[in-house]
Length: 253
Image (cartoon, rainbow, N blue to C red; front, side):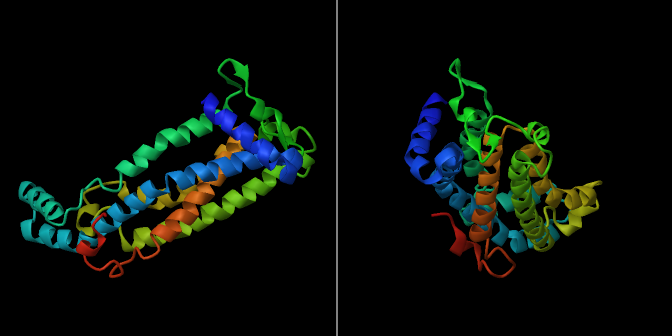
């Protein structure tokens, strides 16, 4: 982790002539974007896998009608279909899991008060008047919501709320056309309706995260969340019934 801290420190030195006192904050945003760009190929692979599996859903629905309550035969037929089309049932999951260590490492870097037994120098810098090591509660003690520090967090909250609203609407549309569970199985799963309604709201949980973590970590979270929203909107722009064509055209490269 100290290597990442050094890289961010060097990046802050490079952008200092442009951002002056906010150089460290700008370096955190830029470094987060560089990392997200580096793992973008994994995101593209996950998108291809998810589209390929979604394209098979009409054929899987036919298999459900054909085999009825014979679950053993149904599962065997589904596995054979995946093998025939060269689509893994988990093709969209593995790339996302591989990204998680990098994201947790960055979050830890921007929220730790010490690195390798030494104080985290990143947290000594500021964004406008708000210390990168401070939290929203600290900002409220220096002028309140509309104080110098409070306005920094207010700007982040507005950005996060905008991204969350975008994700909420997009998730609602996706779940409307591609339910998590086929309609013929929903009655057998009590509580699914409530969970389906709650899931799109999870995007707004980022507001709580930004409010309680150090500002440096909040900048990482906001940057990464915004990147994810734009990235997913681009990668899944044609994820609607009939747009993908057949599964053959969506086989992962």
